Length: 124
Ligand SMILES: [Zn+2]
Image 1: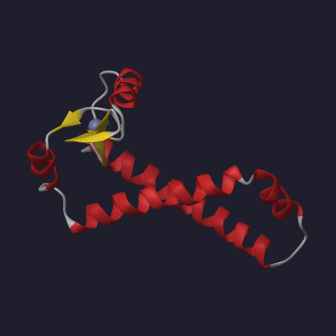
Image 2: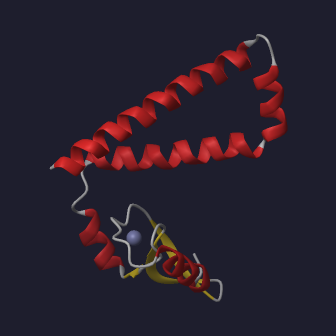
């Protein structure tokens, strides 16, 4: 991530708290600076700061964050192919339609589980 991109991210993220879920290499004039940028809030960290933060991680949390990124990436890919997706959505049968239906159900579950967890976390 370039310094300009990081700055734009910081400005759009504002003062909200951030758990710094994932980091990207920081680039200046096309070269890595050796520092890292939080991909969510745009804050810059030295390698040491980043390593200290990730020590708080555990395998379950890492898996959660990794899968979250994969889900986002795959769903973005699908929605960028909207015309093909429309054809699938309008079809009457077929394996693509079955997959789309399964995806819709899983998305529903994902939303419900996340909402439930958020509610519980808000209460504690
Ligand atoms: Zn952050």
